[in-house]
Length: 291
Image (tube, rainbow, N blue to C red; front, side, top):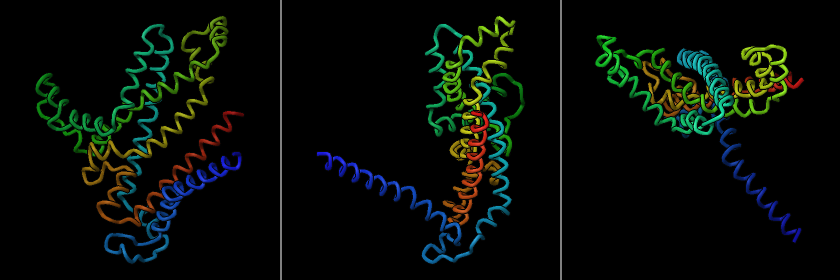
């Protein structure tokens, strides 16, 4: 019976390795090989080896540079906004005595809302003929003509950043709320005896105690910011003239609209390299935090 159990476990392990290798390892290796070839629709049966040509093209491409700046900007705006508002929501819920579950559900609803549906709603609101312009022009009479929110680079990105910030508040709230519940009450009592006010307790007790959670949220949200795609695709589609594209939306366009799979493969590994650097920073910061 014991030998049969070991045999079954061995078979399961082999099956898992085969599935993992076929659906994960093989695509990564194949993609890495593609990045060194001139691989497009016209040469799908016969590819030309060009070495680092695709990587050089990615780094020199002005559209990629625009997409990279957009991604950095998106991350720098949405990450602090999500963390600050999520922490404020967590503090509010942590300090109230009633309706905690209701507030948790209320704040977390945007997180479980479909990105596609939320993006379409925001597009409808900020469209030239959308709800916001109707309210500003026809109801409140604050403007004489419709504002083209989505027709400019920073207007379209601004709407996407507003959506990203709104959807991320609930996730941060849950993370920070869990961290706040681990802070010893004795530390707050000691701070009160020393005459510390609410702000002093927050800066001297709360923040140091949840510093590890703050770091975790910062790194995870930064990686998520670099992976923004759905909101850009649904709200602006990269318009006007790919000025609102991010790294992933530009990668998608080059692969499935232009058919330049070699370029897209190289771009994916450039992105992976950046994310690897972020992971390295994460490990270093966590190590220093533990020390």
